[in-house]
Image (cartoon, rainbow, N blue to C red; front, side, top):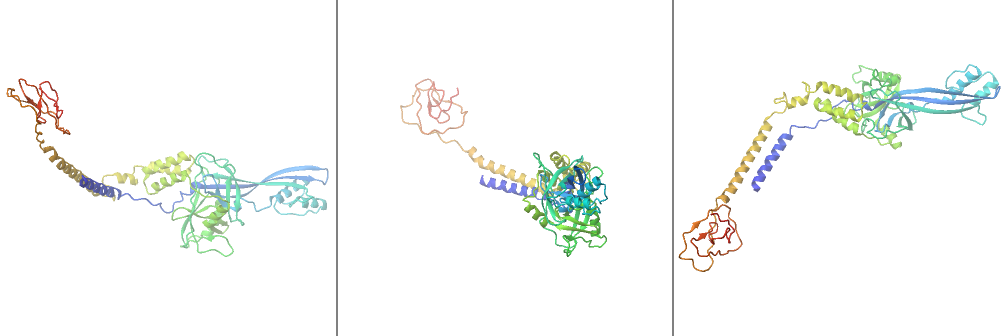
Length: 490
């Protein structure tokens, strides 16, 4: 039996190796921006200022005004399912003093004087009005003629369909010192319940090689049916530029002036957009600069500001399901990818990227491009040959036949063994000479071994019976042998 078990076990191992060998794990394909674009958001920042002018020039009056000053439009990246965003300081903090702007506006409107509506302090020719104007400008003093309250409102518009008309409000909790320094924005009301939002994975480091290919993805307007994410190809330059933050871009083939191209896109709303590595589709930095000089700050600065803000970037359930489906899609297993994208849309119904990829997967499912269909065919072109499976089946059949034969050989001698001779009769009274002819009782039950012998005594009668199982003498009224218990059939 041990030999049989060893043979069967060996066949099973061989079959497992042969059947498992053709299945290989797919690495995540190169150059995929789809891993990040669901987590890209449009950012719009507005400074809201409320000002009260205490008019002491003529009749005492309190004049109240409020102004909304949009100061930034750009792109951010969600790094936590609760909606936490990494962006740039310039998208979160107004560099201008809006209190000065409000003072110029309210004085010009109330006193009917010409003052530019800008963020600079001005002088008036009228000494009395000029003194009151200077007392209206910040910083606030004991003789101030204006009371000013300034708040900043930042709105994030996610990449969803149908588009979110109001987005969700965020606030800046940490920012670097310069306009192109990274900043951390958290929702005013964090998402409760559900699985949150899609997030973008952060890389471990920036590629060192000059000319390394990247992609920059962001929005030039609010996401909607007519405004999709913009994706541009770029290449990392060598080292940094003295006096400038970030790493430059440079086309190794010198066909495109990438700093100029990306600088123009930054001015149109791509500033702060994630720079995506071509190796695994992870974020390696953020787009900064503008004008004719687009650059990139690296992922180390991003993770540094997150640590300072005590925010841990992490992936969620949406990302796990989406990445699994995305791997199937980009390796052309469309039949397997479709249910994965459907699961993503169950978790996050507005995912624009997952919806578009699901539509393509369903269109190509079972078609000539579907690798799952090719693999399931009997003779797929360029696919796995069938001989390993046939060989495995043959080995299993041989092992099963050999095991059955060994088992039959082991049991055959036991079944052919003759029954032992009946034990000798114990001492007792002599047999009756006048007894009739011995009658044979047919055996209908298997032989039973009993622990000790017992003598079966029969009274004199017309016939003497003996048990055909053990040979003991039976009585005329017995239905069972008193020695072995064998039933007596008449």
